[in-house]
Image (cartoon, rainbow, N blue to C red; front, side):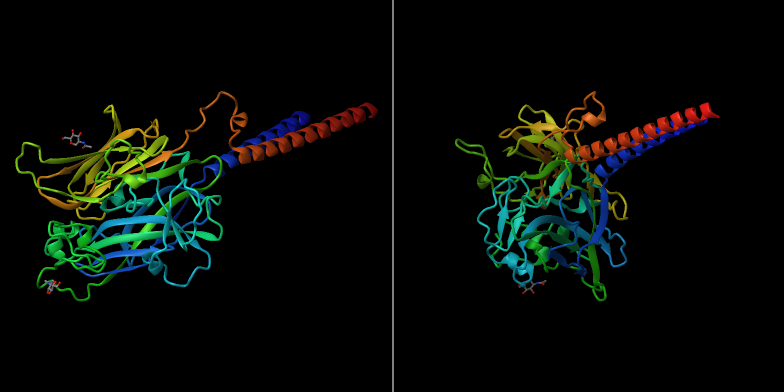
Length: 475
Ligand SMILES: *[C@@H]1O[C@H](CO)[C@@H](O)[C@H](O)[C@H]1NC(C)=O
Ligand SMILES: *[C@@H]1O[C@H](CO)[C@@H](O)[C@H](O)[C@H]1NC(C)=O
């Protein structure tokens, strides 16, 4: 009886050790970390605009895979600020490398000076002469829209989560140029609409409300341009109601951003961000390669009010673009401004790939502000959509044209994986993971250790058994 108990106890311990160790590995492999950060502060007044660039924001360091990037504007006490008080035109984040120990100039000045270069993913890393090298997304827009993540008013109810096993790879040490460090730049564009004369006009950056005739860098604005980013740049002021008490209304706001990530290892499949723009000027022509040099993205456009109700008062804008990658779309979402209805991506055959629809609020509380787009639906195709290099996809962006809109956008984010997970095989887990070399080896090591322990235990047990037997004979 006692012997049986001893034997089964050893077996149980061995099995428990094996089970707990394998679970332990699985847990660390899939361990998603998260952290919440606050941007530097923005001081806002009624009608004021801030379009600030913050270099070297707080961010998890090292070789990681980003699973999501969520953000919202909060006040000094950490309370969410509703869009009807502070409109989030956009926040965008962009990675860059900075030369270690480079000049003590504020980085923002360096940014404005010449000598800032950009690195396209996949391009080789020669001709490094500048102190800052931006890391661009893989999309087609040449100079603008080169960021990784970015949303506007929809930020509170748009999922940016990337399902397993995918993650956006950040700071791969093999891609980092020698002598450089990896950092992040945040651009936050907010419009304080407390007490303004015309809230819709202020958030659509209507030029006359800002009394702007000259752009941020001193160039005269085309008289045909009624509104948009060129009229609501940093430190411009939207018209406030006369008699509105503007005193003591200054307040400090922050972008609160929540990141989820995993430490990089071989179980994570890398995915890259691509941004498409419906205002891209590109057209397929003879000899066109679809190369980034052929693209010019205007980023924003105007929706004219409909004249008859014959067209249903929907403005439909389409753009066909040649895709610059081979891969699988594992996430998609559109960015639109108020008036937006939704956007979709189609194949040439008309087959739908991803539809992202606008969600409007119907209350006053943050995340549900009436009249504002408070979220966009996103696609996580259950079967990731394969796209081949050179394939033409069409982006369709719809706005309501019941009233006109200036400065609207039709931007589409895709996150693309280069490969899919290995198909599940019928072999036991142990033999299924040749690509997971590190954890596989660790697993193997633990298994060997457990086997040795079991063996030793068995030998001891047997020896004891024999001794027991011998003793029982002599007594
Ligand atoms: C608009 O700007 C002009 C100069 O650019 C200035 O003379 C005028 O006072 C401004 N109007 C208002 C309402 O601020
Ligand atoms: C855009 O509008 C057109 C015309 O009404 C419609 O056929 C299409 O499905 C709409 N697409 C989206 C994404 O809303």
